[in-house]
Image (cartoon, rainbow, N blue to C red):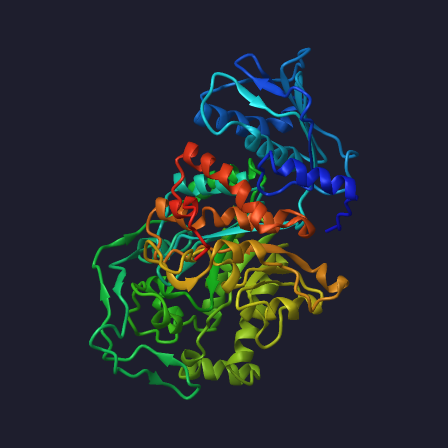
Length: 559
């Protein structure tokens, strides 16, 4: 990560241009040549690539033109005298990683990147220079843009366990990330509510674990149950009271991805320079796995069920028993996952592991005594360290939620800080990579408005809060700040059951997220961002994206 220094003249140019050209995330440097004629795309325009290695970028642009503007251009390696869009790689045009320079004139458009991803990011900017309505010719203004990302990790997450989304929509979701210059997709594939990835060695994970018999429709204690008290355990952990009323819809829900479908999605993302990070939850959030293989739980004679409820009552569900059988199971699962996903990183969860189950299990207590593990917090650390060692031996690196800090951080792990910034700060101070993803700032399943139009998690996350979030905490010095790898938005699907609701929840907050991840901190300006967003809304309409029209109301105040 390198700090941008703009001269006063350059900054003035940027501010002047942004008022007329509306690109999100905001480029590092943009100058409009207002006195010069721009470029016109017509049916004779060619996309010229210097080699087939840039075909992904050309095809993505062509697909957008064809799908939304009814244009289809010829892709070629032969450059005509005029009327072409040129895509090239030149590592010398910038000292920054994945940078690009985009320039337009009346004769051509040129996108030169320092890498293939850089060229692809230039294409995303070019898309935002296109008209937002169908025309016989597409006029592009005359501009010069120099741009590169602020953070190396620019991620977005999707939970497919609480509600399953098919391959076609997952691809669409990846396209949304690509349009916002994001480069990591965190795929939350397993949880209490459904196991979504085929594992050949353990077929019951999808035969049993991929399906639940209903989903919660009534939260407890609920009306008439206000006086019900929690059952309180020795460590003051509250669990669902035995006489609480819980209502579910009784509708079977589920689905999973075959390994062939997983490979298909991985390739689709790779063509867009997006790395997919799979998440296999452990030791908690494992009820779907336990329903399939109950012998792995702390109550091996119990008939576990794939969870039908979420929220507070689900937070204290059973955990995996730390036996050799369990570790053998997890190693087998992770081996298949690592063989599927080329990602260097495997997310292993590690969050919200209630210690009550280990505490009351005679088998767990025996294991702890044999291994000299002093308490259940230390057992959590032992569990994560052991999995990390296995993953490291396979040449991969684990990512975990910030609970993996409890009892001592695994030596090579990347920390995804969700319970605020404290975990991320602690990890950065000991020189370990951090992805900032604090719940209060970047959980896009939280409602966008104080009075929400539809059911959402009962917390408020307005657009402005996402936009103004700064991933590098002030407590870190310059050296420690280098370990803030980037930031990620999360979308948990408890109350998100269909693609339209996904779109409604992420748009336009994904625009704010992308600008926070990509653009120089010095250039961020929320009122000016809102002005640029007006053009983006027109693009949403062109693309048929679902979003709240409340943002278009002149009386909208952000609440």
